Image 1 (cartoon, rainbow, N blue to C red):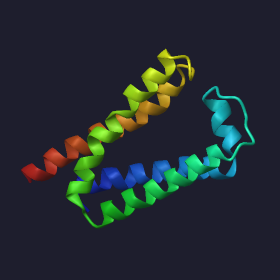
Image 2 (image 1 turned 60 degrees about the vertical axis):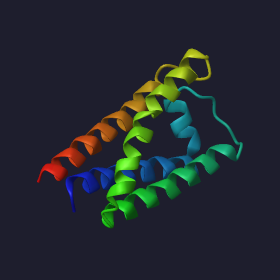
Image 3 (image 1 turned 120 degrees about the horizontal axis):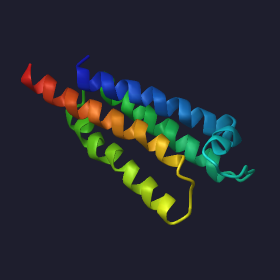
Image 4 (image 1 turned 90 degrees about the vertical axis):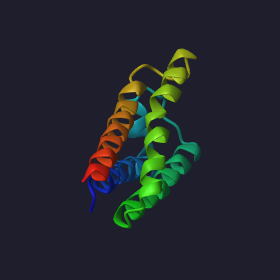
Amino acid sequence: MSQAARSLFVFGFYILGLGAVLLVVPNVALKVFGFPPTQEVYIRIAGMFLVFLAVYDILAARAELRDFIRWTVPVRASVIGFFAVFVLLGFAKPVLLLLSLVDLASAAWTGWALKKDSAA
């Protein structure tokens, strides 16, 4: 497995875990990030979508789908921008930005790995 694929593979398991938490015990995650508890189904639907996205990431990494891996870099890096806007608009507490740092760091890792794999 290339380094770029490995980085996406690891990220896939991170979002698989996050998605599973949102599916099974969503109020735990909501509390950590300063959101009120809910019984609404929307948070479980978000968890389901994260699980689906995780499956795509893991399968793409295993298949070495370099284009897909490359496409994920700017999308994952953009999460911090979206979350910053949510915080600035008062939709979320600043602690949400901590979650986006994982996306930014993993996107940077993948970008770096893509360059390293290309040089090899």
